[in-house]
Structures are given as C-alpha cells and as structure tokens.
Image (cartoon, rainbow, N blue to C red; front, side, top):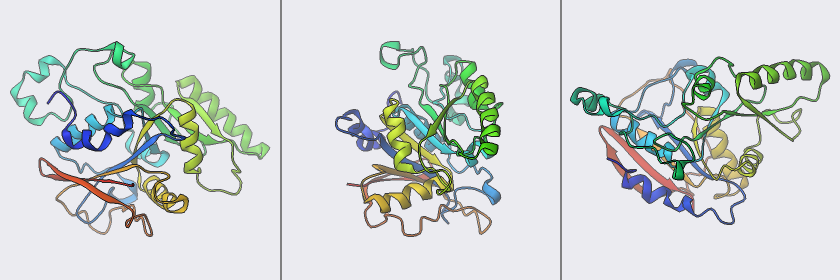
Length: 284
C-alpha cells in the first residue's frame, strides 16, 4: 500500500479545504479493548492495536499537521508521535514484511512536505499545565536527531510568585532541551484543566490546520465532554476508534465519556484491519 487506506481518505480528505475555520480540524482517535479499556492499571500503556491497524494509524498521522496528547500519556508511554517508515532493505525482507508495523519506503518530496523525510511529520503537541514534561524524552531526542518535529508544550503560567519561579526554571530547562513552551492566557487559578477551545484556537493561530488527538483517557474525556458543552460540532470533527478483540478487565482504564456526544455522532464507515475493527464516526 503506497497511499492512505480508502477508509481514512473517505473520512479525512475534507480537511484539505480549511477555509473559514477558526480552529483546526480535529480527529479524536484511540484503540480500546472489547470492554472499552484504553490503558492498564495506573495508566500503563497497553499495546492493543495489531500490525495492520498500527500501519493505518501511521497513515493517519501523515494526514494531520499535529498530534495532541496529555502529559500523563507523555510521561507514562514516552511516545515518539511521528510517522515511522521502513527502509528499502527492511521492506525487501519477507520476514520483516510479515511483522512490519510501519509505512512502506518511498522517496522524499520536499516540495510537498517541506523537509527531506519520506512522509509528513506531524507536530507533537502536549497538554502540560504545570510543565512536567521530561527533558530527556524520545520526542526531544527525535527532534535533535531530525527524526521528528519540535514538540510544543501547551501550559499555564502561574500567577503566584513562589510557583512562578519554579515554573520559569522548568521552562528554561525544557526550552534548552529543544521544546517550545506555549503558555495560554486564562485564569489558571480557577480552572484545573486547560480549556480545550482556547488550546485549539491557539494552535490554529500557530499554523496547525488539522490535529489528531491520541489521548490519554483524561484528554479524550475532556474533548468529548467539552464538545457537549460547546455544542455538538464545535470541538471534534471525526472520531476513529480501533477495537481490539481482547478483554482487559476491571484493572484497565476507560475514557468513561459519561454524558458525551453519543447521540450526535454519526456512523461513517467500519473497516477490518487484520483482527481489529476500526469504526469511523463524524459530528455533522
């Protein structure tokens, strides 16, 4: 396969016409078990997606300007959040092909991507209210080695002087390590979580026209619940859920959307990727 699956193109090709948008197009996507668990005990990472749906996820990443996660996922999983592909030598190896979870090799096209990588590299965006990001993580290592883009840390600048001093030290450390720190202007003292509408407006102003929200549970819940609060179509455009044929059990973590916009979601299509069922929905 040398182009995105038709399943993804049918859902996401409309993102190519962003005229009139005041925020990025938003794709909320995650993998879950049959009992709706997305992580293990304490938020521990679970490998739920099979090989074929993992490749589909990498294709999805190439179709977005940014990938957004919460700080909990960043600290627990130490993810790379890039679109990974195999080299020609690996791709010619039959054993590798059977187990590969990456995109096929192809020549770079700087005229399309603006860089010398074979595929579009999405911008990692981390919701990190208190700047807890690890300055030694894979995201920053990938950036310094030109394997990924510079991560942005969306945060809140505290108003209290004693907190602000420590916050500035963390900010300087992270910026020296390569991160871009993006403080939001809002009442940090009265809101525990970053306001999602303001996050989207901010990254849109910085040039992100489409963003793929990958989790974790709290971020998924926030997007779904704030979508209800803001009206059905204001925060999420597409939801893509990979369902793995396993049960995790009561120790697993669920996104537990509660009164999320289930009645507003419209089914677009369902496809099988290996043993996984992938469901695409949209908010009209």
